[in-house]
Image: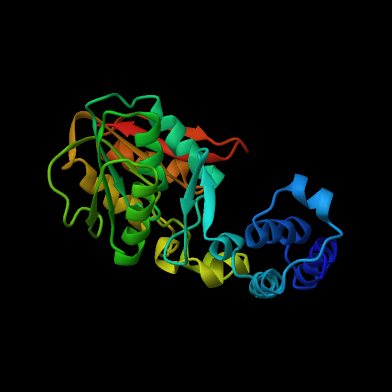
Length: 275
């Protein structure tokens, strides 16, 4: 099979499987399997792949046709201009979450202690450390498997982070100047309506926010006060319709300077406050 035939075949298989960006995904899988770029492709598209490449590509396309997320097949995802290792034990980093990092970076300073609650792949805390060096960082997660991914990403990006296995604050000690979190916030009834890539393959524990999607916010808002220094900050990602509820929680708990930040799509994405 030549390169051009491979992408045509891959696109057709993915289109038939209902994959939204079939042509793009077919190309990205070819790029990953064959370790080529577009320049090489367009100048060699009539050349034959090796049998090993063809076999590996066909396997990758079949997996994607089963709606396995592209990032779990390639094993990586870009976030904040950095490349992160991912697998089915962690949520795939999304551009929406960059709003949380960008907003937090506005107040990050050398010497600050920062905690990332529910770190997953580590993309948030690692991005903060890469863009605001000189801080002391901790990333926590209840999942041992997720922490293994986070540790790998920490080594990849050469940042020093204390990784702690913890259910929220259970094993956390000390106080912090900034706590960030992207907690599970999908209402249980809405999980079944998510796209197959998310519903069937991403870790449900990182998605399920309880009956109304707000369970973890209640706990984080209530408990964070015991782990923040005076004038410390709490920044959390939220669902597009959760701004008012989380804002009310934070105000009722005594946080000040509470504000909601919108993402690039103009959806409410981050709630921040100061204790």
